Image (cartoon, rainbow, N blue to C red; front, side, top):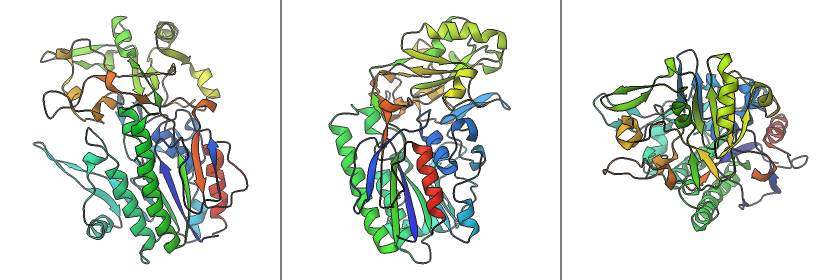
Length: 425
């Protein structure tokens, strides 16, 4: 048994991939909703979204009355971390590119943190702890981390290549080498949404991930690390989006304001609105008396599978105050898109740009170029894969060099096993 551990959260890993020296592997269920932030928060706490509060990649922040996606404060994830006792014994912990890691109580940190210039443009950088870690890795690797490879039309496995090289450096440099490293590889996330997630592009993404894991395995052997790799969600083919906010707008529940000919959400005067996240949508209904009518309206929409009220959310592990009064799941083969307008000329300015914080929902169309040049697509019909649903039909893959007590049934069980393992090293 090695004295250190590397944990790799591999986006969309729901098929077998080889890790040299693996002792065990298999498939397990993930959490609901099966999205990045919810799954990562569940692993690091061992808790469900109903307990830690990360009910999606974003949600409606009621104190400021607006939805926000991809906020990175560790304070958003409630609950103890599985490494707290481990670190209290003097062991060091690193988080490399995990979501909601800024401000986390760890010894080493690396997270994208660009500086947006006042008159446009961006300075690419990563926030690091210790403060010189990123600069040191850039020198050692020979190139900086490129945010355009991490998200947007140019997103590619190159982002995972850089993260894998960085993690390998951290493991093999004696003055770094923390006893626990949590790294995130987004390698499979992009083309499984752009292309058929069961087609050739998906297998190429698997091969690229396998190359990155082989690099990490060699570095782990040199640095004295065991490896655990797990998937967070399963991407399935989709044939088209569902637009809950259009339905709510048509029915008078979703309010907009017209500015310079374009439509923008007016959340302060809306009676209901959907914050969409892949195959899941949180529907916020400020007036309790409107909940039943909104539920009945959305239940009749083509492409909507379940409409979960507060009581039903409890049984799905998402019954938290951050969740919508209603939570929708799409039928298999469909997903939820955020647009609330009908005519392209009425689209808000941010619709044609990569704008992950401003849009009131996740927008995978940002993975495609649009027209005119320099914009992103506004055609959600180009999206070919999505995720968010969970259960027996959406299991994810795990593999490890650890000697686990048995195969984990689900992600929370795997987290518990890692917590126990950390007591032994």
